[in-house]
Length: 128
Image 1 (tube, one colour):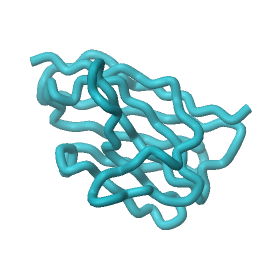
Image 2: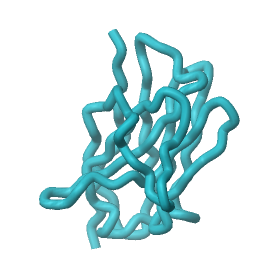
Image 3: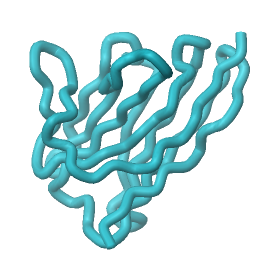
């Protein structure tokens, strides 16, 4: 079974940190690209980060640059999103997803059209 399972979300105070995990099963993440997306009620889903496992190149949305860091562990077949200096605007349901080979960035925006497998999402709530 091809599956992504996310964990690590929770409630944190403004300025705090969380580390999200995206564990893959049923396939190897090697040579895939893995994106992180977030969504709040009434808003469109937005791509915030992506990593291309073949060369470890990364993408970050401008609003999270310098605060978030994406990485992956080949042995554990898991992708991580380290989130530091969180603020209430970061409150959202966070998803990870896989693209066959690249991070589809168009005009500075990470698109979701090529991401076929999605996790269930993990809630991040940042209090002010």
